[in-house]
Amino acid sequence: MRAIDLHWLWERDKWLPLPDLVYRQDGSGSGVYYPPDPSPFFLEDGNTIAGLNGIICVSPDHNDTEEAVANTLAHEWRHHWQWHSGKPWTPQRWAQCSADEYLGNIAAYYLRSRMEMDALLFSVRAAPSELSSEWVDAISARLQGYQKTT
Ligand SMILES: [Zn+2]
Image (tube, rainbow, N blue to C red; front, side, top):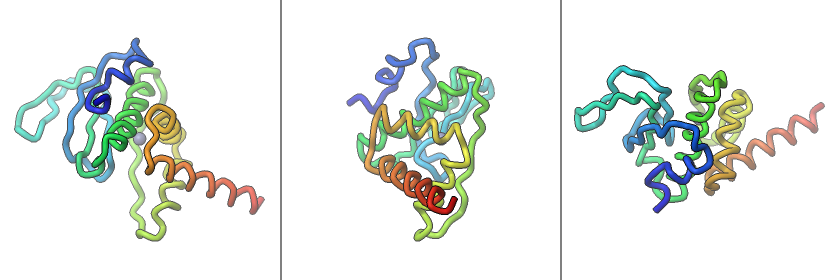
């Protein structure tokens, strides 16, 4: 199963150091990227890793299919690529939102951040998932709404 490791992504960007890959619930999203940092990173079992090449965390609760895991890995891999490419990447927080505004908030989130949009589009190309495609559709609908009002 290709989704359990990063080598299928590394094949695209062989100049990048391989980050550590950790499966654990971390924050409210499906994944998190931690840029290289020499301070200890604590695993759920109490052990630590150094994370000198960066760390990609995948949250099992939000990735219940291989398709979802692969999409999350691709998204976080892109943040890894951004960091090593000197892009001004900063983590973005999800806005609190009610369930009926979910897709609108998704669209606003990605439209606010060029780096998040880049990671979303990369993940849709590298490992499309039902959810990521739904998000791209929501962004597209939002953009068409902007066009109608201008
Ligand atoms: Zn992201």
